[in-house]
Image 1 (cartoon, one colour):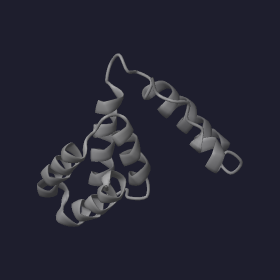
Image 2 (cartoon, rainbow, N blue to C red; image 1 turned 180 degrees about the vertical axis):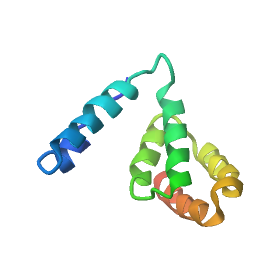
Image 3 (cartoon, rainbow, N blue to C red; image 1 turned 135 degrees about the vertical axis):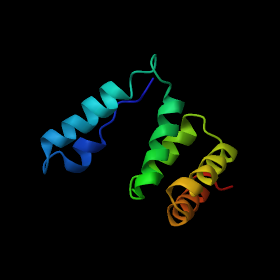
Image 4 (tube, helix red, strand yellow; image 1 turned 60 degrees about the vertical axis):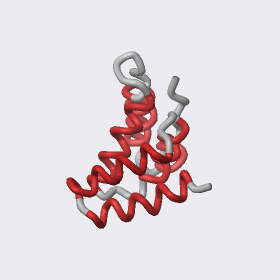
Amino acid sequence: MAKKQTAGRDQLGEFAPKFAELNDDVLFGQVWAREKELSLRDRSFLTVTALITKGAFEQLPYHMQTAKANGITKEEIAEMITQLAFYVGWPNTWSAFNIAKEVWGD
């Protein structure tokens, strides 16, 4: 089961309370909690792929750590990023590999 997310409220609660609520309660509280429809592992795989595709590297470390906690292995993340290189661009995947090395490093 997905853990209760509070990052929105912790980081933006006073500045953007509605966004914080949507982040914590809707995105993570409702969407990520739909494990019957799609596992946390699969959601992590999709989310990391989307972030790499968009070049959203600020959010990528958190989501890669979550992916690792949700069972994605070092070999799988390396294969995912290699596959993406030919579709989303070499620079995005180089950046993603550097983050993945930090998360899955020995």
